[in-house]
Image (cartoon, rainbow, N blue to C red; front, side, top):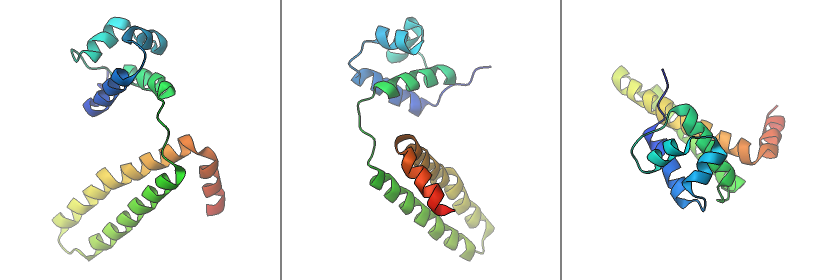
Length: 139
Protein backbone atom coordinates (compact mmCIF):
# COMPACT_ATOMS: atom_id res chain seq x y z
CA UNK A 1 0.00 0.00 0.00
CA UNK A 2 1.38 3.41 -0.94
CA UNK A 3 1.50 6.28 1.50
CA UNK A 4 -0.22 9.47 0.38
CA UNK A 5 1.70 12.71 0.84
CA UNK A 6 0.44 15.42 3.20
CA UNK A 7 -2.04 17.73 1.38
CA UNK A 8 -0.41 20.87 2.81
CA UNK A 9 2.95 19.70 1.50
CA UNK A 10 1.40 19.00 -1.91
CA UNK A 11 -0.04 22.52 -2.06
CA UNK A 12 3.42 23.91 -1.45
CA UNK A 13 4.86 21.75 -4.23
CA UNK A 14 2.12 22.93 -6.61
CA UNK A 15 3.01 26.54 -5.82
CA UNK A 16 6.69 25.90 -6.49
CA UNK A 17 5.81 24.41 -9.87
CA UNK A 18 3.62 27.40 -10.75
CA UNK A 19 6.42 29.81 -9.75
CA UNK A 20 9.01 27.85 -11.67
CA UNK A 21 10.32 29.17 -14.96
CA UNK A 22 10.24 25.59 -16.29
CA UNK A 23 7.24 23.94 -17.88
CA UNK A 24 5.56 20.84 -16.44
CA UNK A 25 7.07 18.54 -19.07
CA UNK A 26 10.63 19.64 -18.20
CA UNK A 27 10.03 19.32 -14.46
CA UNK A 28 8.52 15.86 -14.96
CA UNK A 29 11.38 14.67 -17.14
CA UNK A 30 14.10 16.06 -14.86
CA UNK A 31 12.48 14.75 -11.66
CA UNK A 32 11.76 11.29 -13.06
CA UNK A 33 7.98 11.61 -12.73
CA UNK A 34 5.73 10.63 -15.66
CA UNK A 35 4.49 13.78 -17.40
CA UNK A 36 0.76 12.80 -17.25
CA UNK A 37 1.03 12.20 -13.50
CA UNK A 38 2.62 15.59 -12.88
CA UNK A 39 0.24 17.36 -15.28
CA UNK A 40 -2.83 15.97 -13.45
CA UNK A 41 -1.24 16.87 -10.12
CA UNK A 42 -0.62 20.48 -11.20
CA UNK A 43 -4.22 20.78 -12.45
CA UNK A 44 -5.44 19.52 -9.05
CA UNK A 45 -6.98 16.38 -10.50
CA UNK A 46 -4.91 14.06 -8.31
CA UNK A 47 -2.49 13.98 -5.40
CA UNK A 48 0.88 12.28 -5.20
CA UNK A 49 2.16 9.40 -3.16
CA UNK A 50 4.94 10.14 -0.69
CA UNK A 51 7.72 8.74 -2.91
CA UNK A 52 6.69 10.79 -5.94
CA UNK A 53 6.27 13.92 -3.81
CA UNK A 54 9.78 13.39 -2.44
CA UNK A 55 11.22 13.08 -5.96
CA UNK A 56 9.49 16.29 -6.95
CA UNK A 57 10.60 18.12 -3.82
CA UNK A 58 14.20 17.04 -4.31
CA UNK A 59 14.19 18.34 -7.87
CA UNK A 60 12.41 21.62 -7.09
CA UNK A 61 14.62 22.31 -4.12
CA UNK A 62 17.68 22.19 -6.33
CA UNK A 63 16.02 24.63 -8.70
CA UNK A 64 14.50 26.91 -6.05
CA UNK A 65 16.16 30.31 -6.33
CA UNK A 66 15.10 31.52 -2.92
CA UNK A 67 17.91 32.22 -0.51
CA UNK A 68 17.96 30.28 2.75
CA UNK A 69 17.19 32.16 5.92
CA UNK A 70 20.29 33.78 7.41
CA UNK A 71 21.91 31.57 10.05
CA UNK A 72 21.32 34.21 12.74
CA UNK A 73 17.55 34.12 12.06
CA UNK A 74 17.44 30.32 12.29
CA UNK A 75 19.52 30.35 15.49
CA UNK A 76 17.23 33.01 16.99
CA UNK A 77 14.16 30.94 16.13
CA UNK A 78 15.74 27.85 17.70
CA UNK A 79 16.54 29.83 20.85
CA UNK A 80 13.03 31.26 20.97
CA UNK A 81 11.34 27.86 20.62
CA UNK A 82 13.74 26.29 23.14
CA UNK A 83 12.89 29.06 25.62
CA UNK A 84 9.17 28.47 24.95
CA UNK A 85 9.58 24.74 25.60
CA UNK A 86 11.36 25.43 28.89
CA UNK A 87 8.61 27.86 29.92
CA UNK A 88 5.93 25.35 28.99
CA UNK A 89 7.73 22.65 30.99
CA UNK A 90 7.70 24.94 34.03
CA UNK A 91 3.97 25.51 33.58
CA UNK A 92 3.32 21.80 33.19
CA UNK A 93 5.09 21.07 36.47
CA UNK A 94 2.81 23.51 38.31
CA UNK A 95 -0.47 22.08 37.03
CA UNK A 96 -2.09 19.56 39.38
CA UNK A 97 -4.89 18.59 36.93
CA UNK A 98 -3.77 15.68 34.78
CA UNK A 99 -6.09 16.58 31.85
CA UNK A 100 -4.66 20.10 31.59
CA UNK A 101 -1.16 18.73 31.96
CA UNK A 102 -1.76 16.23 29.13
CA UNK A 103 -3.09 19.01 26.88
CA UNK A 104 0.04 21.10 27.37
CA UNK A 105 2.30 18.09 26.91
CA UNK A 106 0.49 17.37 23.63
CA UNK A 107 1.15 20.94 22.44
CA UNK A 108 4.81 20.54 23.30
CA UNK A 109 5.07 17.14 21.61
CA UNK A 110 2.99 17.87 18.49
CA UNK A 111 3.92 21.48 17.70
CA UNK A 112 6.95 22.79 19.50
CA UNK A 113 9.32 19.82 19.30
CA UNK A 114 8.75 19.18 15.56
CA UNK A 115 9.30 22.90 14.85
CA UNK A 116 12.56 22.78 16.73
CA UNK A 117 13.63 19.63 14.87
CA UNK A 118 12.75 21.20 11.49
CA UNK A 119 14.74 24.34 12.28
CA UNK A 120 17.76 22.31 13.34
CA UNK A 121 17.49 20.29 10.13
CA UNK A 122 17.29 23.54 8.10
CA UNK A 123 20.34 24.87 9.90
CA UNK A 124 22.29 21.69 9.21
CA UNK A 125 21.28 21.67 5.57
CA UNK A 126 22.26 25.24 4.76
CA UNK A 127 24.97 25.81 7.36
CA UNK A 128 26.66 22.45 8.07
CA UNK A 129 29.84 24.13 9.33
CA UNK A 130 27.84 26.01 11.93
CA UNK A 131 26.17 22.82 13.13
CA UNK A 132 29.55 21.07 13.43
CA UNK A 133 30.85 24.08 15.38
CA UNK A 134 27.83 24.00 17.72
CA UNK A 135 28.35 20.25 18.30
CA UNK A 136 32.06 20.72 19.00
CA UNK A 137 31.43 23.65 21.37
CA UNK A 138 28.70 21.68 23.14
CA UNK A 139 31.07 18.85 24.13
